[in-house]
Image (tube, rainbow, N blue to C red; front, side, top):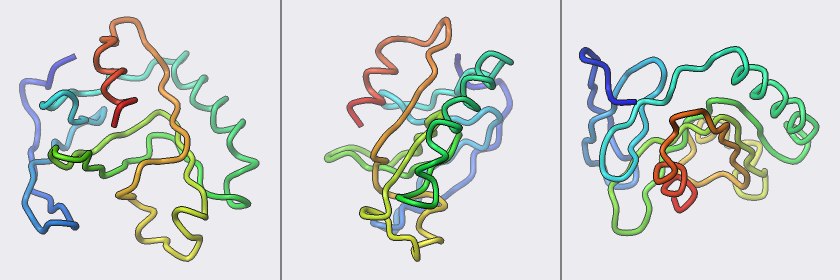
Length: 135
């Protein structure tokens, strides 16, 4: 799915480099994949139910060993590439890697999560999924 014909692009800052980047303020979220913006597919009932099930599986870890969440925004910069947002369907990051007291940093972590779950929808390009795994 491409970007909608109208959207808000806002300037955000890569905290590690203090450089401005364009962030697409869309619903559903827009991620930066294979060098360009890609809007996530809209969630249907089946997708929402699977996300809920994933969180139920992760919930025992949430708070005890780390943080778990759905549609959680991560700010990542693979080596040699531009910073970008990724918004997995569900994710977990341990307190070992992002300590409990780092609440502000946990809002949009700049490190990859320990575990990521993506619900594959019909029409999701395989190369997009492979790229997100590589990041």
